[in-house]
Structures are given as structure tokens and as C-alpha cells.
Image (cartoon, rainbow, N blue to C red; front, side, top):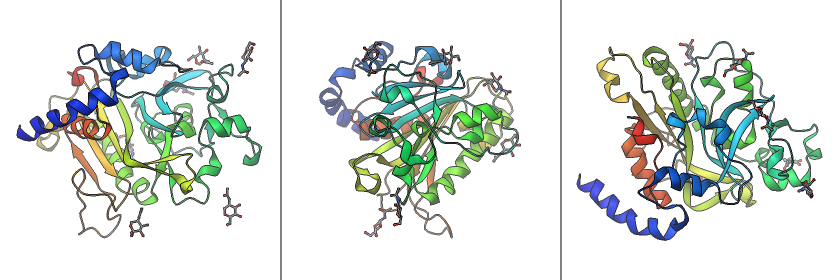
Length: 314
Ligand SMILES: *[C@@H]1O[C@H](CO)[C@@H](O)[C@H](O)[C@H]1NC(C)=O
Ligand SMILES: *[C@@H]1O[C@H](CO)[C@@H](O)[C@H](O)[C@H]1NC(C)=O
Ligand SMILES: *[C@@H]1O[C@H](CO)[C@@H](O)[C@H](O)[C@H]1NC(C)=O
Ligand SMILES: *[C@@H]1O[C@H](CO)[C@@H](O)[C@H](O)[C@H]1NC(C)=O
Ligand SMILES: *[C@@H]1O[C@H](CO)[C@@H](O)[C@H](O)[C@H]1NC(C)=O
Ligand SMILES: *[C@@H]1O[C@H](CO)[C@@H](O)[C@H](O)[C@H]1NC(C)=O
């Protein structure tokens, strides 16, 4: 209680200064709409079905992308043009069947030219042929080549049933620079645990939002000031209809669950402590937590109120 009080005091004043434009505490829906509509090409209205109660997370501003692959909407992403990387992707979980597809990496033509179609396209081969307006407007494959980071999906292909859904996740606007040990270690374990838990115990739709926590001072892939590196990844789900026979260990993971994962072994440990007794992936721990705790950490780092789900999924 005391800690909560401290955080709320601490973050109230910065919130007013940093987020004047996006800060209407009594009208979260209205403020979301205002924040998201500031001079951006996209808007979430055609893909609000990927958000619980048609309500995108409030408190973050960026370019909304309704991810359109082969003329269908598959999920939604809030993209930062300045950072050339996403703030979050939001999607509906569906039970996976079959293997991970071989990904063909794609880009969003509408970011480079607002007249272009909003359907994602594969990068040309060889990659050098990418149009310079595209290179300016978003991350491209060359950004990741020779860097010490892998392409980390926010919306992972694992959480989707069919091939088209899975292929649609291979767009670089759904990807952040993620250390290999996080991507193939504890973060992948988290995705897998969520897969198993939702399959067994979620009885209706499961809405997932996965996003990033930036460094206090931005860091960039290959120091090129193009693609910003996240210090942490976070993920949360909302499953309003779930099994009445939850095992004791999962009681607190419904209807909501959240987690924060480290992307830098040198980060301090107040958000996510490091288990040094582990043999592998030391420093890339993932910490499960209640949704309310995640929102406290988001508020602390972003300096404003961030709500992931409408009325906390209640
Ligand atoms: C994207 O997908 C929808 C159908 O899901 C379609 O109606 C729409 O026109 C598509 N194209 C663009 C450019 O948004
Ligand atoms: C978009 O299309 C309009 C009308 O056809 C044209 O005037 C404008 O220059 C185009 N913008 C870009 C960025 O191509
Ligand atoms: C990656 O590094 C190799 C070897 O140093 C170099 O030849 C190549 O051009 C680099 N590629 C990119 C995209 O930076
Ligand atoms: C894949 O799933 C989507 C629903 O997300 C569905 O509309 C589509 O028809 C499916 N495609 C195939 C090939 O089964
Ligand atoms: C995901 O869940 C499905 C359905 O229960 C299961 O068959 C599959 O093995 C799971 N995959 C992972 C990586 O957890
Ligand atoms: C962590 O710090 C060490 C020592 O300063 C440095 O060599 C290493 O590159 C840092 N790791 C990351 C991921 O920044």
C-alpha cells in the first residue's frame, strides 16, 4: 500500500508535464483517441476487434498499424516512427497447430508513402534494392545484420493457429532488437507457458498485448540512431472467461497475467531480479507479476498512466 502511494505521488507530476497532450485522466477512451490521432496516417478503427472491449491501451502515442496481410487484418501494432520500432502489438491468441513457418520478412508501404496500400509486402531481394523512402520510414533487414541483436517478435508466430496468421507476424514493424539469450531463452519459455496455460484454462477469447520498456536514455542498434533497443519486454493477457477448476498455482493468473523480461544483463534489478544460480541465460530473467504491478512499472518509466486493458479486464 505504502509503495503504491509513493509511486502514485511520484508519477503524478511528471505525468502532467510529459503527457499534457495525452493526459485526460477522467476520460481514458477519449484521451486514447486524441493521442492516437495526432497527425498519423493510420488508425485502429478497422482492427479494434484485437483489443478487449475494442479499447486500445491508453497512455502511449505513436502510429497505429492495422496489420494487413494478403488483404486481411491479423493484429494491431502501435509503431514509433522516431524509434523505428513498435511500442506494442495486440492480438487474439489462437491454438497453434503445426510447425513455425519459415518467415519471409515484410514491411509496411504506407509508412513511407501515405498513398500506398496498407497491405504488408515482402522485402525485395537482394535487400539493397529497398526504396530509400522505406529505409527512412521504418526498420529494414540491414539494421539487424551484423548487430548483436536478433529480431524479436512482439506478437509471436507461436500464438497462432494457421499459416497465414503466423506468416503475418513476420513484419519488421512487429519486431524489436532482442538479445539472443532472451529471445531463445526465458522469453520463449514465457510464450510457451502462456500457450499451455491459455489452451488448458482459457474458455473464451484471450487478448494479448506485448510491448517494450525503453531505456531511460535511448540506445540504438549499431549506434546508428535508427532502431531503438528496448531495455525490457513486457506482456499481458486478458482472458475474461476461464475454467472454474484452476489449479492452486494458477489462481492468480486469471483473468489477467503479466510479465516483464530483461533484455540486458547489465540492467539494475528492481524491476526484474537476476537468478545467478541458473546455468544458462543468466541476466535474461522473466518475472511474472499481476497486471497492476506491470502498470506501476510502466507508469514509472513512461512518466504517465498506462492502462493495458479496459477496466483491467474485469
Ligand atoms: C485490409 O484488410 C481488409 C479486410 O480484412 C480489407 O477490407 C482492406 O481493404 C485491406 N486493405 C487495406 C489497404 O487496408
Ligand atoms: C499522394 O497522392 C496525391 C494525389 O494523387 C498526390 O498529389 C500526392 O503527391 C501523393 N503523395 C505522395 C507522398 O506520393
Ligand atoms: C556485415 O559485416 C560484413 C563483414 O564485416 C560486411 O562485409 C557487410 O557489408 C556487413 N553488412 C551490413 C549490412 O552492414
Ligand atoms: C486463418 O485464420 C483466420 C482467422 O484468424 C481465418 O479467417 C482464415 O480463414 C484462416 N486461414 C486459413 C488458410 O485457414
Ligand atoms: C502450444 O499448445 C499446443 C496445444 O496445446 C501444443 O500442442 C503445443 O505443443 C504448444 N507449443 C508450445 C511450444 O508450447
Ligand atoms: C554489460 O557491461 C559489460 C561491461 O561494462 C559490457 O562489456 C557489455 O557489453 C555490457 N552488455 C550489454 C548487453 O550491454
